[in-house]
Image (cartoon, rainbow over all chains, first blue to last red; front, side, top):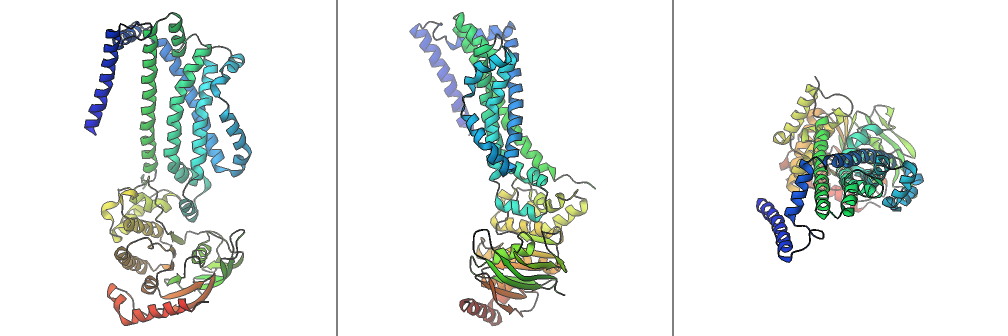
Length: 256
Length: 247
């Protein structure tokens, strides 16, 4: 395992070195393909001068807001659809239809509705995060082991207890898989949303860099987005471990 | 008055023919009663009817003279598979029936640990179920069913998936535990030696009907050596004969 990690890191450095060498030997223009060292320089300059920070903060806010809004509503909707066969029957066709609609294609419409700025981007991000959670939650709540449901009936558990003590913990891996997808998509939503109608944020910055032919800056912004996306993904994994831990702690507590 | 009584039960799953037909059964306090039959004979359905997990279309189940409409706190149920919650520790799984109905006190914990000790699982109380062998998981499931000190225990082929040696050991430990608590048991199985070894009385089911019933007069406490006695083998043979002649 440890050796694999070392090899993996080595591969990354090797690719960067090859890239750097290729650019230097081939005398590629930094307009087309800037060398990693040039990108790193641009990144450092942007961060140290404080030029990038407001944009990072702006996009981060949109992603967090969109994610909170979309994921929580998707989760709540998923629980409702998972619990009630009737709701499922009524709403599921529309859920499927709205899932098929390409959300990013709605961005121009949202600009008409909500104007330029943060709101349309947050709405797009929320919409994109909504479906993976809705679908995963609704699906896995129906796949809970029938024997365990019978056990809870035998133990005279209420519907609420069956939800909190059985269905949700049992569904947690699947729900968190949905959240991991949502977290990755949230960055897509926010950045593309900014492409279309924003003057601030990392997406807007990529468009601006393209306009001024500052390719190193584009790469620098891409690097930031990648690092932030990765951080969110890791945070998800951490959250999953924490939640599983809290479910197992619940009944351990002893009152005297 | 019998303690648990099944009066002329009829049951059919929706859109299927009747799986339980006119089933009658009586259980005295502390009695161990085995229900034996081939797969699909309706014995598991009869057990679920007795536990209130299913409601009969005709007839009635009575526990201590009161009609059973749903599972009560007097009952414990051990399913065919251990059905442990994999996110809880072994001890928390055992305490689940308690923690669903109120705070877990120190007495409950002590009792849970005592049951685990009696089941030979003391060292595993903080493990997760997936770290346990199949036999150990079955033991945890039995401890979980006993934690509420039920007056009657329903067992649905709980040892069917275990290897022969583990099954023998579990049967002995299970008997000891039930005798010490005075728990009445309705035990579904398709294994004739298991039925004869555990039961005070064995009832034979065939195609949804009660066929015949056999009194097991082996002395208690029962122990392993008994399995090889002529009396034991004679009872097994009798049971086998009854199963073969079932219409």
